[in-house]
Image (tube, rainbow, N blue to C red; front, side, top):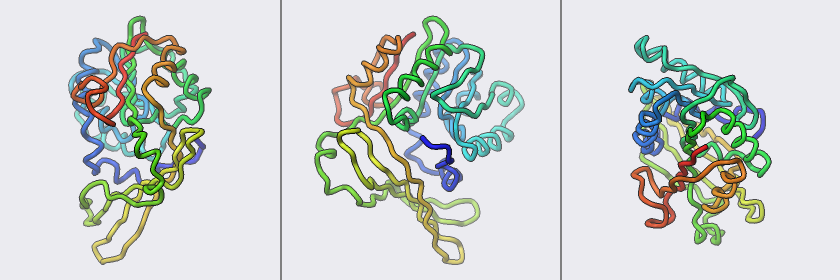
Length: 260
């Protein structure tokens, strides 16, 4: 993870992608059941944070991206004062932070953990989370479950894939969301990925905006061992946000609920 804000060019489109919304109810329910304050790491534009705060939960949103937090703050300002009072936003690095308090629940929705490319960075993050959890507190972290069949097939490298239908912004711009795996290092378990937004303006002008970044993929037992090394006990491993037990669908997601 470099210091550059990789989300600067594309943060304004993030909330319009419907794929990002499928996990919201799951994380809101986990927050409501926690019985205390919540820390969300990688809160982005507030797509999970704001629905959580609306239910009466006190939540701290933590993110590295200035662009994402700016939009989150703008969205928060449109909420009732009671919702605003439940939210604190903090900018920082998930590998090294100290908020001076603990939480009943820490969540990491939509794969921020996979931006950590080394074991040292992964453990640094998990150890920070440990220090910020109350005794008996829980961590919820989701990953994509890597498909061995896809990883073994180089034919998909460099291929642009349309992920969902074109959407329209309030100012009339039409946006098509695509993604692409640019390269893959099997030994390091890292893929160089591009998220692509093809934008068509109302006057017909076209523009392409690209968010490029490396992403580490992890396997089920690899993540369980990382959690154990950081002092967590894994309570559940789910394959989707409906709490389907891992192994009943493939590849599915990798969603861990771990207890301090």
